[in-house]
Length: 579
Image 1 (cartoon, rainbow, N blue to C red):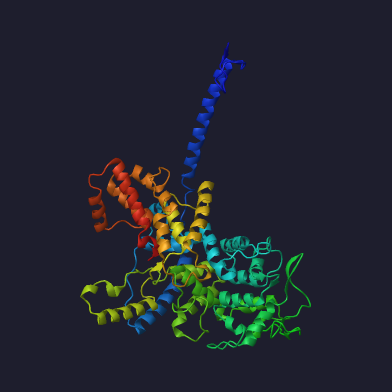
Image 2: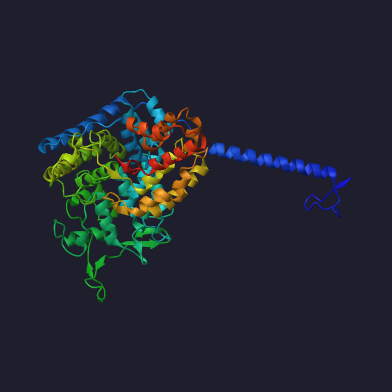
């Protein structure tokens, strides 16, 4: 017996046995089942929770030591508050502090999974233990590596053939993950040699390669800004008009980088090369010879001829207070969103002993030095300080009705509020950086933590979406700690962008769909949505409002309301600001 042709349904000349047709059809059905099961397994794997995160106890002596250092910072800030008649804000609730920590250390809000685990933790000092666990998470090393890389090599891709920013960031992340002391990291960058693809630290130097040669002026400016917290760029052409830095001092520092060259072995200092400066680009003479020289304390360089190794020792020397103050100010800025001295750029501090109001940075720096330049230790001390854990609500505005005040009273109140903010008597309200905005949007899309344990598909999707979003949103670049003004295109991107629509769909594999499926009541759905998006529960007024709006809604209508709720929370000012 023969049947119709399997492919065309025609009889002639196909000569396909009926039994074979039946077998082929059974195999077709089987393959369809296999494909469906495979899709189900894949989607299930994508939404599976990562490996359980343990939050072990931190050693009692380690906690006690960090608390003592944080108490010293609190005492110094209390001195400022007393001198300026500032009443500090009250402590913030723990979920608010947890959100701040997650944004500062991981660049995203905490997941619902993490929130449930945190609330189940009954230890009275659970925040301190969670802080230590977050610092050991790979997300911290990766996120902080990006933040620090901006001041070390900028944000531009540069010349790909000899500069690999991704390789530099991977190297820096590994240094942070393996607890390499910060002063050692800096010395390796300044004194680096070798091939940029194999030795990630070399990219600190090759980032300044352009037009076939190294730019030693750029490396000098970056060294003093990133590692000493001082801007002496203008001394490249003339003596600093407002500070003591001289042009000759800038040139002496630049000469350390003046021998850099490229060889088959990579980046090296060419023997016999001299660093000369021409007074005019078109002059025929070779220019004025400049030897490596440091502006003060040459003994910090150690013995022998002045090379980049000696410069590295000079920059990181234990007596060079500029080094520790620079990283203390940058860490403070990354934790709060603003540097400690808010009216100056993060890399433009005055000389030590110039401003007594900056003694907080000296306290952090001294503790940093005493603990082997441990960056995690400094972050822990800042995060345990009263300033980091206080509310963002001004105590002066708690009982003020602006509608009942005069213009003179409002002007006086604004001046008082500025004094409180400059004295760190209240946690500042700061716009989230683009990476934090998209990181928070993507995390709020999933119930489980999106991290290095997540499924490959989730991580790839996040990487692609983050890059695309940051490009459209606008990257502040190396000046990310300066005041940022929100723009209309940014708001429209969050409100009407394709990503926003995708993330608020009631997909059963995403947070909104799962919340709708698992919530026993609309009230429970509302509470969970607020936790996922804002890391808090709705207030009594908010709950009453939404319950009134949802009254009588069922099925698809309630689904539409839930989708609108997620859209509202994504686009609320509270979502896009740190507070």
